[in-house]
Image (cartoon, rainbow, N blue to C red; front, top):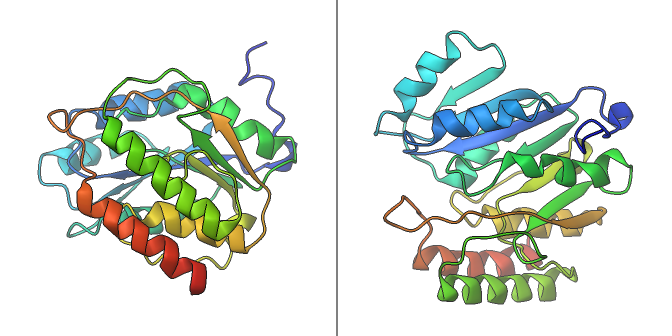
Length: 241
C-alpha cells in the first residue's frame, strides 16, 4: 500500500483543495496541474491567475473548458502572491487546503507527508521544510542565509521553532483559517500567516519536503526588497492583527 493509499480521510470527508497562485507561468502551468491531479488526492484545484500577460491566462481558459475539477479566477491586474492566495482561500470548499506554487519548485509527490499529521488528528497546520533532509537543488547561498535569518526572527516573535518559515508548502484545516484576514499582497504573506497561526495557538507541524529551486533566468521572482518587506511584516504582525 502506498503512502497516499494509507491516508485516513475520516477527519476530512470534504477532501483536499489545492490553491495555486499563478503569474506568468505559461511554461509550467500545464505540468503543475497534471502533477497535482496525478496524486489522486485532490477534490478541487483552485487557480488564481494574478494578471498574467505571457499567455498563462489563455492556457487556463482552454483547460477549464473540459475539466470540472478546475476552479479558475482571473485577477484583472497583478496583486502579488499574497493577493492571489487570499482570493484562492476565499474560494476553496474542502476540509483541508494546501498552497501550491505554479513553478514546479515544489513537488506534489510530497502531499501525503504534508497531509498525514492533519489526517491523523495531530495538527491543524503543516509547514513543509526544505531544511529537514529532503532532496533539494543546490543554489543561492545568500537566499539560504536570508531565509534562515527571517525564520529565526519569526521564531523569536512567535515562539515557534520552525526551520523554514518562508516555505511555499503550507497546509491548513478549514478551522485554522477561520477569522483570518490576509493583508499582505506579495511574498510577505508567509510571515503574516505564520504569525497569525501562532497567535491562534494552533497545533503546527513541520515535515521534510523536496525542493527543485529555479534561477532568475528560469523565472524566479522573489528579490531583495521582498526580504526587507518580510522583515517589516514579522514585526508588524507581532504587535498587531
